[in-house]
Image 1 (cartoon, each protein chain N blue to C red):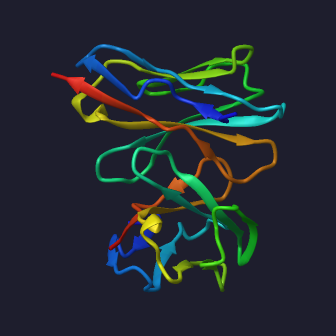
Image 2 (cartoon, rainbow over the protein chains, first blue to last red):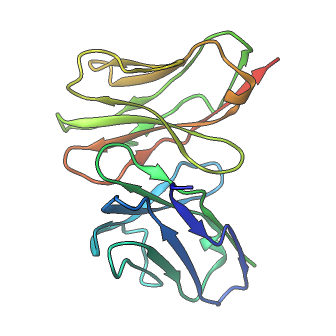
Length: 111
Length: 114
C-alpha cells in the first residue's frame, strides 16, 4: 500500500499522559499536514510542513502540542499532558501539489 | 463568517437516483480551489473532485460532478446513479489563494436507500 499511513489507529490514554502519533506520507510528497476532527465536525487544520520545515501552525496548536518532520519524510505529533478535550481523530495528509491525500487517522480517547 | 457552509446535515437518496449536496463558500481571494471529500464510517478521507476558481467548466469525475456557480459562491456536488456504497459523510473544502491548508465544512451525511 503506497498511501498515507498513520500509527496507531487507536489510542486510549489517561488524562495527563503524553501521546505520540506517527504519519508516513506518500513517498514523493514534500508537503505534509496535520488536522484534527472532532465528532460531528469537519477536519480542522493544525500544522503544515514543507519537507522538514514547519511553515504554518494553527492557533489550535497549543503549547502542549508539538510536531516534527526531522528528515522530511515521516512526521510525529506529540500531545503532552493530555486533556479530555484532546479526544478526537487526528488526520495526516500529504501532497506534492493539488489535492491532499489523507491517511486513515488516529483516534485518540482521553479518559 | 464560516468559510465553508454545508446546510444539509443529512440527505437520503434512492439507489440509482441522482443527489445534490450543497456547499457555499466565503472568500475575498480571487484564486482559490474547492474540493469534495468522502468519509466512510472507517474514517479515511477520500478525495472526489476539485474545481479551481478560474476553471470555466464544471469539474467532472465519473459519477461525480461539481456545479460551480461563482457569482453565488456555491460549489454543489452532484452524484449521479447513487450506489449503496455512496453512503458516507461528504465534506466540502476550500484552499484560499497561496494558503496551504484546507478549510472544511461540517459535512453532509448521505444515506442511499435500496
